[in-house]
Length: 555
Image (cartoon, rainbow, N blue to C red; front, side, top):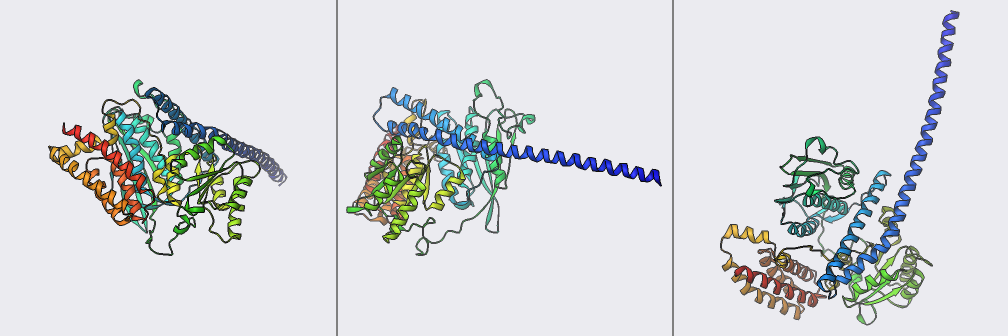
């Protein structure tokens, strides 16, 4: 019994020693985890801070380049300005990738789930890459399932980011042939759709043993020497993590010499779209149509306030808005903005978030409180911020800001915000400059008419000359119908006549003219006539360019 007792005692001592060792190791691991969390937080905070500091001067570089390209430059000057703009956008893309990667690493990436128009998103992305493809003589096309709805709830910004990455890689690594986007509805149940997105290319392909590496961070695969490109190797890794956050799946299939297909599947809830004529339906950010109409300032003029301590930022936004013919006031800090709002009613306010004296958050709170005291409708305040983090965006909403624009300023996003709160005014704003680099002869025609549509028509019809002649004969009468409707300020006739010209122009892939007519049609359907005269001028100019192209096609 003594030996057995002694053996048990030894075992207990050994067990206690092992427990103590485990306790020390556990404590050590907890300390390491705390240090790692602290290091991750410090890294994320640093990247957020440096991102903000870099974005502020980048706003000046990109914004001023955009404005410069809207002036009368010589061809050589224009080329240099486009190189500056392209380099600045590439740098901004790199900053965004690093910031996204740091948020994913720190598990701080949060999806922003809101209603969005998926079909409009796909059209926007395709328009971008159709132009990119033309520069390489690539056909970039889309096959969209007719069952795909327009309205879903999800993070439209991140879905766009994934598609831009996949399509961008496909165009980059394909020298001839085509790049095709395919969108299918695989399943519909419980008011949710399972969607599959595929990007197929006719590039050089990827060997099977290297395919698994592609979704790892900082990974780049070498193709033929003529197709090697620089980059961070973060794009596909970020895409995979975003799709994982959406509870989706991602993958690829590829064979050397046979091209590649990258795909992902996500399930999205369908948005229930209510009848806009229902008086209970108001803007999701609390602005009703009466509050959002332009011209609420003194004397019926549209008044916009820009609040920013950086003169370059104010200049970029001021010059953009002056083109729209509005009255612009400026404030260099939040306190000055509060005082200006005490004296004047503004239709729209652009508010920088980080400023000395008084920041944009406190200024917004005081301006909204002033309006409430005067029992006036609150002015829509749009945040201007270089901080792309979810926390800052949420703080903007919590403060009462109705929307936000990220610096550097994107003119397309500016148009969307202005369209939301001052309908019709966006038609007079400059659009984002699209860089068409080295093009062969016929580049102008490519910018006006989609050659793939013309070719498809020729395959289906044969001789296009009679069709083109009829279109050119009727185009002038259609334009006169639109002009008459605009002169009469008749929204119903504006929508109808623009719709007709849009449809016939689309038959020839006249994307520029069809797009302008679509904007005119939308204004008419919304019952708005503001901005139609300026848009009519653009339609006239686009129709002249189209007539020149189609006349050459006849020759």
